[in-house]
Image 1 (cartoon, one colour):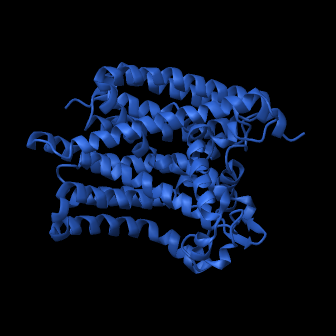
Image 2 (cartoon, rainbow, N blue to C red; image 1 turned 60 degrees about the vertical axis):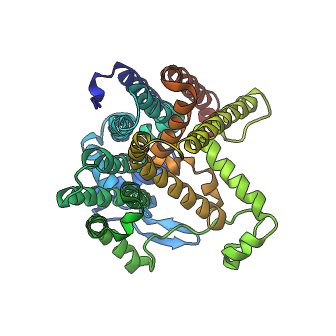
Image 3 (spheres, rainbow, N blue to C red; image 1 turned 30 degrees about the vertical axis):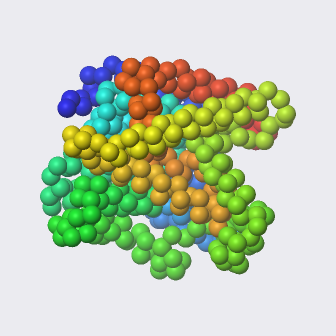
Length: 444
């Protein structure tokens, strides 16, 4: 199968549009106004000026060394360090904009890998659709244009999945396991989310490959263990440091309780038994969903009543219908293939080998963010951007659903229609930034 992305002009069109919007967001988003961007930049400044890692000085009130994002591992910030050192001192705001370009590169590099992963189970147009559904979202543009470690995590998780599902899929020997362990460890040194995504993807890969026999496959467990051990060795110094300093390997900020539920001190069981829990649970899932598409930082700030709110609502209803149609189609396709010939079963096994790891990474990330939102920090309910590193799973699911519904010709039309959808979404987001958010929230 030819998966050479370099010869696909349609893919290049998607990549070019994504890159142009990322550059536009770079200059449209006020410096320091990306999610936690000032804290991320303070981390880099602290490394350069004081040659030290930040620590959490106090949880109530929450305070960090030099205002740096002390919760996160250092690899992303170490990556930015030489560029910031080189660009610091440029006139005006040049240093910020140039350092932001590193995030752009980290978000662009995984897109050809995602294309190759999708080509393992689908056509050229199918792979274009998978990439377009990621790269043309405002969330991708925001991540690619600001200083944030989600860009590095997205890159690291995608590299791990590409190694697992493309490069070493048919020959998972010790050398391959060492590479996978290295990718897992590097991702974990960017953000702990990478460990969740990579770990579940690895286990589901073996389950999809071997089926029930995996539980008796000693070689599979040895390979998985080798990957996990190598990853753990690389990432463990950071978490050992956290245990020594804080007594926990992931020190989260002070809880911001979920509204209309008992305080976290009451325990999760008490919160789940509360009569308000079903409504809060549904509301949290909906908030996670709509911040996937319209990034709260741009479209969900409180606004005066008027046409903008109607446009926002239309966007979310459109994507709700889009996901619903894809989900129904995917379920229908799954039911049909339950009774198939051996030839079709082979094709479905190949699809499971690719889809299960990607689906698992996305679902586990969603559940992790959801449980934090429900039981620890309600602000995470608007954390669509926290799902970004594993968004490939969701995009594959949508593309798979539509390919079963509209066929190859329909997928081709849909893939190129996403150029228009993505253009409209990003133009709206840029207009909203420049016309409302910047004038409203810029310091007077």
